[in-house]
Length: 460
Image (cartoon, rainbow, N blue to C red; front, side, top):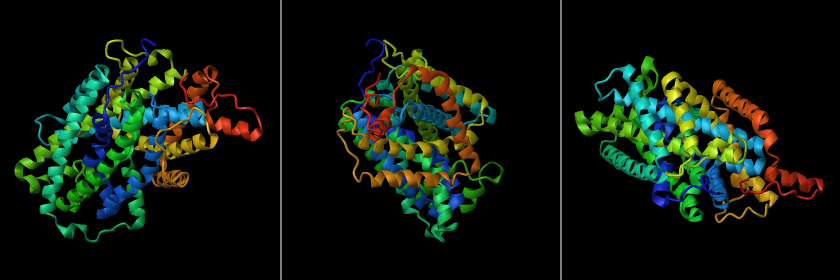
């Protein structure tokens, strides 16, 4: 239908770069010091543990993406599996979390920007706003263009990070890793909960599945390939940061004696000489901008998909005739992004959003179970998750376990997102849809009723 069709313009490489671009950000340039303060050198294991907990969700999403290669990702799968109420909660919550994460990236780059740019602290906000507007224009102008820029930027950042870790290996200080576990097993688990958001980008490419060439082949490869590469990269970079940096600087080098906000730059002088801090800071600014671009590209597809299902106003489903992008959805996402940068303490609210990320990653495993058990005829994935259902049960329980380590405030934040999304569903979407999802099919069969077909995976 004219005005409603997206262009399949993303090949395997740019698709992987979108996924990796969403992960090469705060997980490398900001969070290592926070994790170090909670687990000591064993924060390396925290990144590995977080990857293990994320893997079942990645496998589940890879399967569902090949069965439903449409825009919407997390929202689409949970909606079709568990029904529109859960879909609304997942869609708005995932959108909310990604927008905050993108805002956090653009605000967080300020700490690195101040290390080499002759600007005031007050001007950092204006730089973030400028970059935010650039990201919005880039996303409105075309997915193919945005994907190409993303691929170029991420490739350059990867070269810089490889040089960082390779050279750090030549200067490794083993004494910085002794003792290795300073806060016990509980410290590793707690640190895993906080760095979990580092991997959130791995499945975000599912939200642009409708714009990926040969999705049955490229989506699983891009998800699992980017996750494997990033896990190795995280371990290497965090190990390098610990080896190069003074422990006290990592733990207390931030504002007011908090954990350092620039861990990658803390030991860069020893690595690259006096110019090292500038080199790493520039890489950080570029990478965090890339992360924001990937976040807007992915998150803007949630309102698009929800509008197609009549859970949000119809204008959000409009596709720009010239650029073939969801213009109104991108503009809405961009407007919220700019407002957050200008007026909201994003760093604190990003922590609240991260708890919802863990919750969504847990629920996505249940969505796959619902599809498999309902045996919906239209659900025909070309990639199937290995280890079903044990992998999905582990992913759900492990995610809930990590969620309990986030603390009271982030958990209350997740509850608030759920309550707000539920209100939107009953105020707008409930009267406009009668789908029940795959879960409804299971209930009908249990009651001995005829399947009414409302669990179809096809968009309405």
